Length: 263
View 1: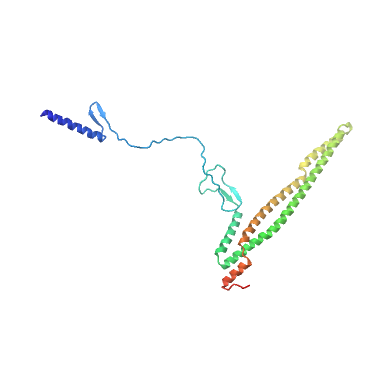
View 2: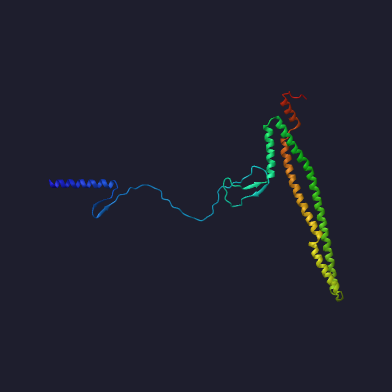
């Protein structure tokens, strides 16, 4: 009976050991052996690598402004990092105001009442007339300024040529007198004249005055041409927006609820 009880006890002990191993609990079979169990699972292994290099976008976009106006200032340079909302360029405010006015005229003319349409048409007509008149004046100013520049440049050329000619004569006289010992005083005077002539060829008051006048005329000419381009744009924009006499008559009759006039 004792042996049977002992065998049963051993079997029971072995069963207990198997149950503990399955659940992953560390147990000791005897004083010298330690047994541990672990659960195996799947996971991803990641690795970070740091490198030096240049980041370049694979997509390059060309941006266009929504308005046709002169750029007053560029606020970024090539290579700058920008984000949504950053100011990139500023336009000329006078040109923007002008384009805005034209857009408002056209929008109001298409959406407004008869009186508003007529008023906007008159204002557009006034802008067209202004551009048309200014273009005639500007063309004359440009022609006159170009003629004045040519005249001043011719005068400057002649003035420089005269000074250069005087200098050549002085040099010839110096050569002639250089071998004459009795003309030492005259040679000294001629050398002084040569120095004065050389200075006058670039610092003469008439030379400086003519150069300044030519520079101012060129600046005026550039301004006239720039303003002419604005008037050309204004005339083209208002030409399509202004009302013809027939359109005005049609709107007037429609407003008065009258039948069309027979021709």
